[in-house]
Image (cartoon, rainbow, N blue to C red; front, side, top):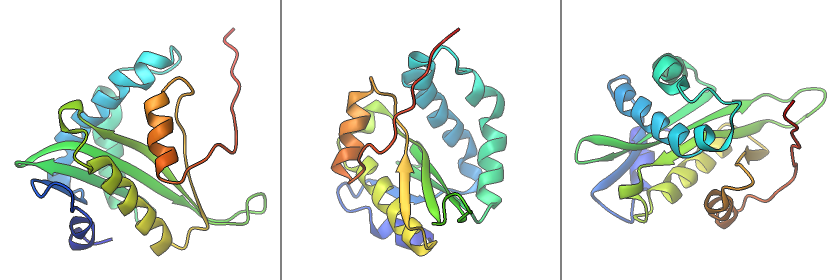
Amino acid sequence: MTDHEATDRAATDPAVTVRVARTEDIPGLVASSAGLFAEDAGARDPAVNADWPREHAAGSFAAALEDPSRLVLAVEREGQVVGHLMGSVTEPSAVRPVKSATLMSLYVRPAHRGDGAGARLVEAFLAWAVEQGAGQTEVTAYTDNTDALRFYARHGFAPRLVTLRRSL
């Protein structure tokens, strides 16, 4: 997906741009990832390293920007990154003979929610998945994150698998 294609999908709030991320966006992407961890995984899952974004996100985003099987989108407002999406595509295998696109992370800062940026991120991800030849898409969300579950359901995602966990 080109910057132009992602930006064309940004129609709700013209002050907010959804575009393919660039290397210079990494500090803003790390801050967005830190917000996601603080609000979601870090608050909901004691087994998650809540410091992961500070320790590893810069390298993860840098690698993803160079990987053609990954998609990194930035939400920009007034020159600042205020959200992101990271996705990947997996080739078919003997177990799962269909190419699959995974929405790995999505976050928009609370002050910038409600302007359609999250929806535009998902729309851009789905278009990218089609361009990659994916036959299905998937995303995970914590069962107690009802806002995320409703958001993804509005975009056509439905439960197909439940992971049960027991702490020891």
